[in-house]
Structure formats: C-alpha cells, structure tokens
Amino acid sequence: MSDTAATPAPAASGVNTRNILLFALVGLLFVGTGFVQSWNTALTIFNMGLISAIMALGVNMQWGYAGLFNVGVMGFVALGGLAAVLVSANPVPEAWGATIDGGALPAGVQVLLGLLLGAATIAAAILTYTKLPSGLLRTLAVIVVLIVGFALFRMVFDPAVEAVEAVDPASTGFLGGLGLPVILAWPMGGVLAAGAAWIIGKTALGLRSDYLAIATLGIAEIIIAILKNEDWLARGVKNVTGIPRPVPYEVDLQSNETFVGMFADPVTASTITVKLLYAALFIVILAALIWLSEKAWNSPWGRMMRAIRDNEVSASAMGKDVKARHLQIFILGSAVCGLAGAMMTTLDSQLVPGTYQPLRFTFLIWVMVIVGGSGNNWGAVLGGFLVWWLWVQVEPLGLLLMQGLTAGMAEGSWLREHLLGSAAHMRLLTMGLILLLVLRFSPRGLIPER
Picture (cartoon, one colour):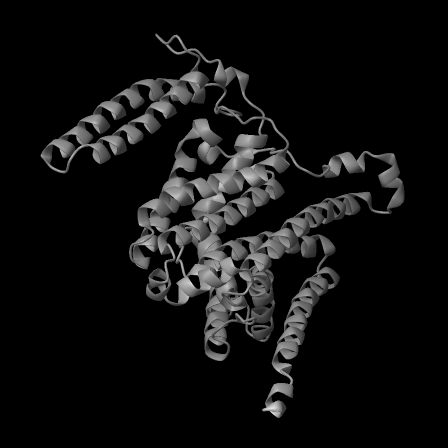
C-alpha cells in the first residue's frame, strides 16, 4: 500500500514536456518562415494565427466544455467585424440628415424608427402567443400582428433606407458608425455575437444537437446575406475601407525623422513595427482569454460543465439546469468568436462581407480544435497556430514540390501542366490528410484533454 502511494506519476511531467516541444516546433515554423521568406510574411501569418487561436478557443469552449456543435462560427465572426464598423467608423452626417419625400423625420432617424417597429412587432407577436390560450384564435391573432407590424415596418423603413443609400453611394451610402476608438469595438464585437447566440440558444438549445447545428448554420448564412445586401448598414458588397487602427500607420512612421534615422530601410522597418504592435495587442488578449479559460475550466463550474457534457441525464438528475448551462457556454464561446472577428477586421482595416466563407471561418476553425485537442485550451491554441501556418504555406510549398517533380518533364506536357495546376488544391488535400493522421494516431488531438 505504501509502495503504491509513493509511486510517482511521471505522465503529467511527460505530457507537459511534450506540449512545450509541440509549441516550440510551431514556433520554429514561424521563425523559419522569417529567415527563409521574410519577417513581414512571418509576422503576417503570426498575427492571423493569434486571431485564429482565439476563434479556436471560442469553439473549444462550446464543443470541448459542453459538447455543443456550432457550425455557424462564420456568422459570429462576421458580427464581430460589423461591430468594428458600427463603433469605429465615422458617422455620415449627410446620410443621417437625408430628406425623404413626404417624410417629417431625417432618414437616419427613420431607419432607427423602422428597426424599432420591427422589434416591437416580434415582441408583440411573442406576447400575443404567450397570453392567449392555444387554439385558432391565438393563431389568427399572431398572424394579424405579424402582417400589420410587417406592413408598418416596411412603410417606415424602406423609404428611409433608399434615401440613405442614395447619398454618395460610390464612397459612402451608409449611416457610418459612432466614431469611437476601435479598441472599444473589440468587446462590442463579443457583445453583438453574444446577443445573436442568445437568440439562437433560446430557440435551439434543449433540442437534439442536430437542431443546433442547423440553426447556427442557417443564422450564419442569414447574417452574411444581410451584410452583403443591406448597404445602409455597412455598404454591402461595396465594402467598408479605412477602418481606424489602434496602431500607427506605416506612412506616419516613414514621415517621422527620428524613426527614419534609426533604420537603413525605413519602409520595411515601418511595416514590421506595425505588425509587431498588432502582435503585442493580440498576445495580451489571447493571454487574458487563456488565463480566464483555465480558471473557469479548473473551477467547480468547469467540473459541472464536464459532468453535463459527459452525461446530461445524470447531471439533470443531480439538479443541474442543463439548458441554462448550455446557453451560458454557447454565449461565452460565441462572444469570443465575435471578439476575434472584430480584431481581424481591425487588422485588415476593412470589412469585406464576400470573404466570409464557411470553409475558412467554420471548417478550418473546427480543424484547429480537433487537431489541437478538444477540451484543452492550450490544444486549441496550438491547433490555431499550426493549422493556420499550414493553410497559408502549403500552397507555395506544394508548388515548389510540383516544380521539383516536373523538372525533367518536357515543356507543355499535359502531365506537367496538370501537376503544376494541382498545387492550388494542396490546401484541401493537406487539411484532409492532417485530419486523417490525427484521428488515426492521436484521436484526442495533439494536446488531449487531461
């Protein structure tokens, strides 16, 4: 008995050493990119790797903590990007004050009034449904409320939107934002995504998991469709550019005599400096999120969430409100994804709704979580860095590989052209191969849940 008690447990230290080596290996990939290609390229990939790691952390909260299958990550990321515009873009006074034929209110105010009417219609329909007894009368009353409310909404909203979008559509054509510091848009991105998650969760949580997957996928597509088509909100497919930065512009650094005198190549130095400043901000956010996530994971709340994930029936029998806890973690994970979306839009200094694709902002994030290790915060972060580096670098590396394989082939050969053209598809092939290898040899991920 005493021998058993005195036996050390080397597995924990071994796992920690292995984890450190894995992070060191990923770090070497970025350092190698800096030496082989350029430090500008390495820092660009690194900054997006930081944002991808935050997205993976948010998905890991939902799946790893509670087993919630969210396939609408793209929508929450897009809401974060929208928040960056609504908070930091300068307002457009001409759009707010545009006149409407036969209207007494300015266009901007009338747009807000229309939105309030739409929200009031939904609230009135819900109230009617809950107050009246079930039956034909309730059904007819709800239908009447929705029809009348929708008609009033369109009557107020449509002419106001038309007036706003007619104001210099080539450069503005939208209401703009609040003109606040862009840093404030990051938490607001989380709040906006959390609000959407609350609506989805109240509707779909408590049902089968496939209902949640369908709901999140559908809502994500609806969000992207709104961003693309509602020009008054964020210019639609015409995009919003010139979003303010939390760091200096390269041109400002290049015009600073002190900065220019410090470097032989001030142009390259300015771009690297800006990327380093972004990296410092993103590292602070990621470190804070990891610290909070680890604290939550190791708390009684975290143990309760794992108990619910592993056996909902038993947890419910012990008095735990499963649906409320699922809603809680779903909102938290979505808020983290929204935060990452606002950070990404700030990094790009533009909102481009057409770039939000399920392959990039849902499938790839899930690959990061699975490869890194679901249920482990550090695993999600590792997967975010590793998979993003591979996603960016596999195509040029694949082209080099194909060029080497076809070096001895005749110019114009159909096989040579086919192999060189297939390099563009190396990303998808590599992601599939990585998933197969991880699921075969390390099914719980590179850093599995403890």
